[in-house]
Amino acid sequence: MTTGTKIKKAILYLGLILLALTCLLPFLMMMVNATRSGNEIMTSFTLIPGSSLKENWEIVSNYFNIFKGILNSVIVAFPATLMTAYFSAMTAFALAIYKFKGKNILFAVILLFMMIPAQLGLLGFYDLVSFLHLINSYIPLIIPAVAAPGTVFFLKQYVESVLPPALLEAARIDGASELYIFHKIVLPIMSPGIATMAIGAFIGNWNSYLTPMLILTKTEKYTLPVLIATLNSSTDIVSNQGATYLAVAISVIPILIVFCFCSKYIISSISAGSVKE
Image 1 (cartoon, rainbow, N blue to C red):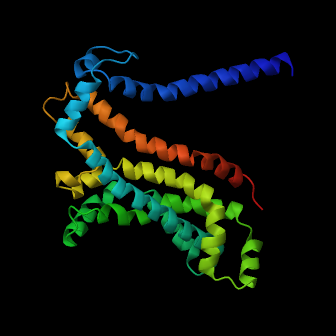
Image 2 (spheres, rainbow, N blue to C red):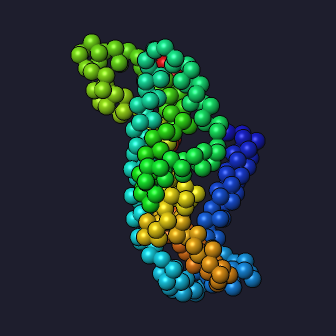
Image 3 (spheres, rainbow, N blue to C red):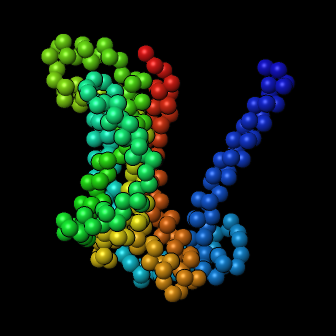
């Protein structure tokens, strides 16, 4: 290895380290500010933990039951993520493998819906939910998760890259049904791509704020983001800054757990998608 190559690699590694530190800085600030009082946060900047963790926890506990909020978010996020992953995989498999009339038009419609902001249909969605008497129900927060055009688009491209058509033909010759092929052959092959998209779906469902705020009117049904927003909307917003950081830090823990269990699939899905038969 020449001296020039070593210098280039050193510069590359140094840049990657600086980038990693830059990405970790907001997370570190969140953890540090969770231990500081609101006045300290507003008047000074430091990366040294404070001594107000207990006080912040008391403020959070006095405003709402954070564990109830976590449970409500779990009730919404996990089923929505599972449904997104399963039905998006099934749709992507059908679009990638089967040939039928209107397939290209259907795929174009899916691409079109990717470009339309979800907020545009919010008023109509609320009217529909109200007409169906589903206000204060978690159903409107879970069922619409089935329609995930971005996930379908990604998984369609992924399954076209990793699934050999000969494997499907061999299974059909052996007498396997289409549902059997999908569940026993296709799903295991697609699992890295599904896990990758499931991480993003879970984060989106867990952090969802606008729709739960409109649909849920009872405090005991609030998801965690809606509960945390009540701290910011209080009249004592300055002193609640530390408590808000603490609540946000707690809300990040489930996301980190899911990411730690599924992150290995991100690398495997990218490497698998780079090779096409």
